[in-house]
Image 1 (tube, rainbow, N blue to C red):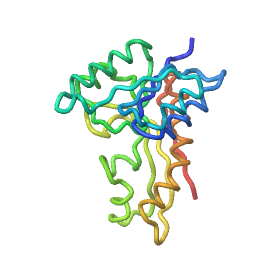
Image 2 (image 1 turned 45 degrees about the horizontal axis):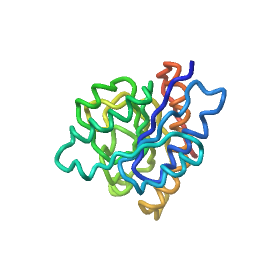
Image 3 (image 1 turned 180 degrees about the vertical axis):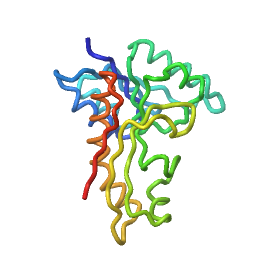
Length: 199
């Protein structure tokens, strides 16, 4: 019995596509929903083109009512009864109550080598700190922002003259390798850390 995966996105969904591409017939999981918080998220059309059910819960009408927004998210998720939720560029901070409901079932990818540079603007902050390496992390989601158990990390070198955009561009292919690799393990209850490096 394959694990059922819901993927939450806010934009183009490149990490969602990487996850979906990897979920072939031999994979222990299958995508059952791609859910976005904005109607213009490009990933919705990409998912639909692959035959994956999609849904959209616009966060804007819920301004100031995060619990209401999350209740609407939960209603969409309950329809597909996911075993695993993958946050893939989902740009909304979730409440402890929502996270507690899905504790142990929710993954996120973050563009830094956690615990370094939690939060936003990670590429810029890595450069400002004079880092020799940068990377990304897949972790379980807990009530602590970008603070859950680390399940995988990928590392790239920082080159002289790099800009934040340079780092983001070079890191993205590593994100697309790391997240699927972690999901494959997580779907069979293997939480052994995945490590990927580029010389």
